[in-house]
Length: 104
Image (cartoon, rainbow, N blue to C red):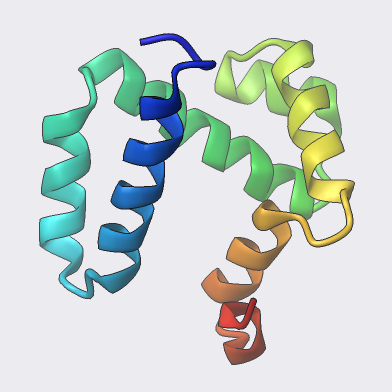
């Protein structure tokens, strides 16, 4: 599939609905490890680590060196984090225990 294939949006929406209902953390992690290749798993974990590091105001060059990722990915993450209504910001708020972050 390519990004413009309507099935991409359809399947992503379906997965999002399912994952939003899963409260079993072991099931969630197991599912992600089954769904993704080891390289994709490491890439996603690295991207989440960079978002958390940006949130903690770590310098971008330090993040790049520490996580072994490009400044381009870090810049993209920084831009996404700064957007109004950022999903990154909302998930960070959920991570930090803010119950209001779960509201749309």
